[in-house]
Length: 392
Picture 1 (spheres, rainbow, N blue to C red):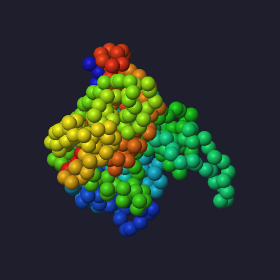
Picture 2: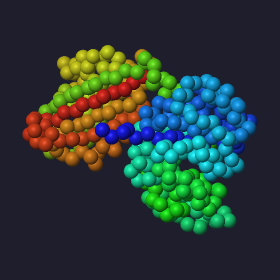
Picture 3: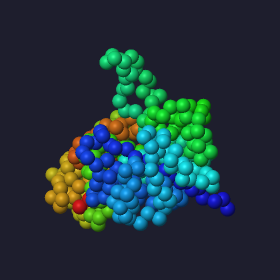
Picture 4: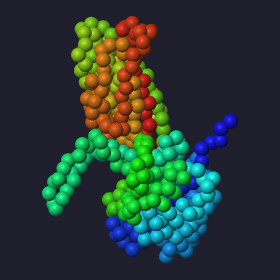
């Protein structure tokens, strides 16, 4: 049986945080009553693949960190608290000096990235073990310009650019060699030193929440994000599920998520028979114990004849709002053999998000066939399933 992968992490916490403003370095600023560094340490304390932690701080901050950060938690993995140098590379070298040859994998992480997830840490550890060096990164959303003397010099291909994050992972032998042979002290990350050796660095998927808290805008985001995370931990979270089926017939429009889909058949029903919206309605009603769509909008009531299901969805949203229930996210799937629904999904998501007053990112819509099995495969009808997560 192979031994599980483990790594030692060097947390670089020696910066002065001048871009954040104020008189306290950003790693010691309080976030929900605890220093940022405390939250970062907690993330690695929880990660099963981390066996040891080395913290590098400014020499003047040693006593303060010991009292304000380490004194406020049970950090069993913290191995050393050491003084760093004037440059980031000096601080990492100081941290490396506290590791041993048996620490075969080393991670280096910014102290002011407190929202790093355990899954991201694991991805980096696994990639570093396999490839020798790895870092998480995110695709660049904006067009980037290189500037010289306030003039645009070049526009790099955005598809070739990614924004690097930490933790960055390395085989210890490689990271030590990179620091021993470093040519510049101003390297902005350790991967840069490895690149200068001509060694490859593997990219793994980063995470948007793994922000480096650098500016007041970042701090405002972190405060809100932490509050949302705390809310997610309380008992106000509820889940509902919905399922609906409608027969395909001639002479009816095919409507899914409020969008008319070109097809020679439509769905049969009292309203517009929007099977996707009906499943979402049932999922939302399930979160508040509100019964199902048939109870709330019975097909015996003529006022709902041929009515757009978006109107019904809007009334359900209002019902949730009256009970002070907010939608966190919705995940739905439509089962249909024909037609192809993928081209219409962006418009469906936009329409549903608009009616529900949520971000498009909070609603997922997928489409699948049943490989010609069952009533869906025989093109006799369509089905839809939805799950809703809400917060009271």
